[in-house]
Amino acid sequence: MPIHGESRHLLEHRRFAESNGVPATAMAENGEMLRLAPGPAEVVDFVPAGRLAVDGKRLVPSFAAVLRARKRIGFSGVAVATLVFNDKGQLIDEPQLSAPGVFDEDDADVEAFDRAIDEMEEAVLSLSPRARKDDEAVERGRAPGVAADDERGDGAQAAGSGSYRPGLGAMNWFSGIVVYIIVWWLVFFMMLPLGVRSARESGVDPGDGNDPGAPARPRIGLKALAATGIAALLWAGIYWIIVSDIITFRGG
Image 1 (spheres, rainbow, N blue to C red):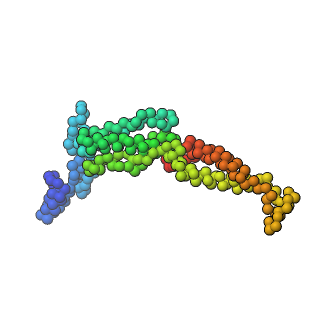
Image 2: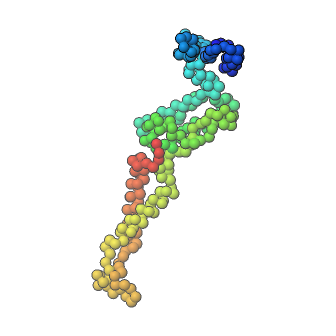
Image 3: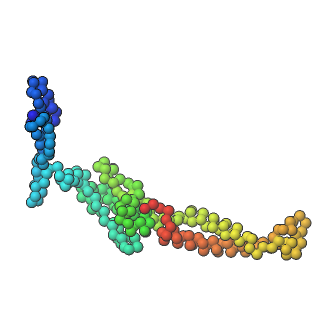
């Protein structure tokens, strides 16, 4: 049984033994418990083995997860964002960002740090007020943004951009106009038949070339004016429903 070297060395030692007539060979890694007899040699168990590291007042395996995490942090740095909301889902203060090992003190890094905070705030505001009350939604709801450290090439990224503004994020000016026009036409067409009597029913001479069933006094102007006011009220109701997040068309 070879006991020294890397795996390739152990394998070659085993082959060398077999080529020289050794009838039974076995190979084991550090920590593997090998049974030699009775029967053929085979690995039957595993015993904790390897180097230990001093961590404060305790000994931990050198391959422990906590030590591997510290190595990654030491190599790439770490960024921790803190956001505080009130019960309405509004930010109480601007986000706080702690990023040891990520940003330096030169002008480019200071600018990247400030931009990361701004984009983090905008990313949170891109969520609806209801979604901001959900920690998981806030954690995964950032929009695609600028990589804060891509200019330096170490791969750390800042939160994304996009802003939610009542009446703008939920309904911008263009969609608001489109909704109002649609509502106005619906109301107007619904009002056209109201109070309409044909020339025959009103006993009015429709005149040469006019159909007797044509409206005698359609009052188009008055109905258009009324439709304008009613559509404005309905539009305000739609606006309030969307902004208050009773009905949302955004994910999360």
